[in-house]
Image 1: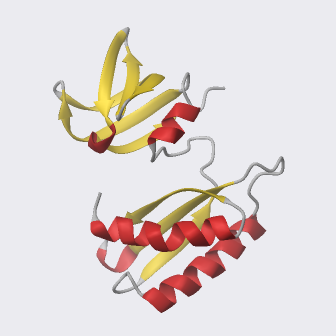
Image 2 (image 1 turned 90 degrees about the horizontal axis):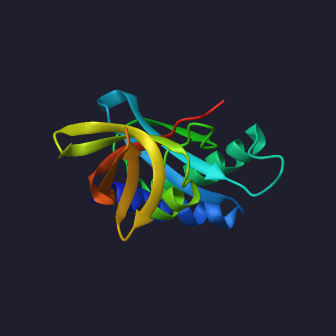
Length: 153
């Protein structure tokens, strides 16, 4: 994990949790002038996350980022719920969604491929267990670049 990502997470997580929400994760996409900091928040509330929740978190996160100034240059701050196709960031999140279909991309090839889509069958140590076409893969969490739940309707 990059030091920039770690620094952002250390600033954002306490703000989100201090407002009573679950910090789900963040994505930082540095693309020159069009950089984006995307913060995902979750709640146990039956109503879920609404626009006011996102606005409240956005104001507080924006204030702390203005003071600490961890991002050089301009960027857009986006705050949202993880949604149905939620990204997965931590092993505990994978654990919560065992049985779900997951699509993931690795930082480097594993068994000759970088993209996998299959049923999440478990977590063993620091590895995610994915069943793809009746073949089980144990994928180290540090190799996973991006993972999302695939909504089933």
